[in-house]
Image (tube, rainbow, N blue to C red; front, side, top):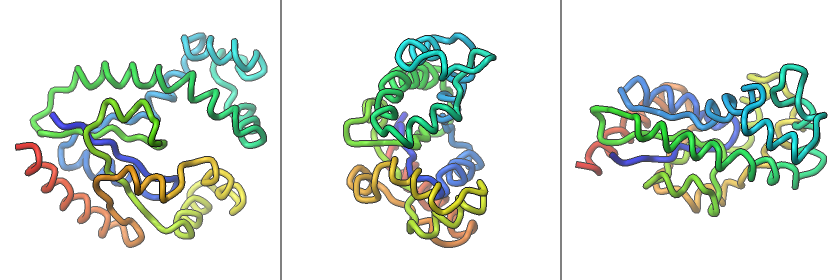
Length: 201
């Protein structure tokens, strides 16, 4: 089975694209969901490592990650994000590899939804292709402001902490432009699905 990394910046419509692939019967492993499981499970290995490296202030009363405190730290100290990723990414990767082994699908390919993908990413070792959902930054900013009730500056701060469009495009084998309507995205996913089915025969 061919594994394809599905990636894109915040507000690009990556999760909606994943939903359309699922409707076509394609298995999608969501790295964000795996991440949430790790940081929301009290006293998990991830939580223990975060507490050791960042301190008790970053663990809430339930024993899970204090997201608000960590978010604030990351925006004021960018190196904290790298430090957190160095803790979480190997654990996320380990879990995804286990999930990949459990997949039993009639499709000849499956997806791993990866919000952050860089040239030196560990996740490149578990995928054979990269599909980028691409969208103009101004459209992405408007979408996230409407969806999350964030200010324009908050969205720009998040984008500044993610790989650039140029970095993502350099990694991509395939690109879907999602600057149009939901229907346009669905049709683009269906076209890409046909291509992937033919690639791995």
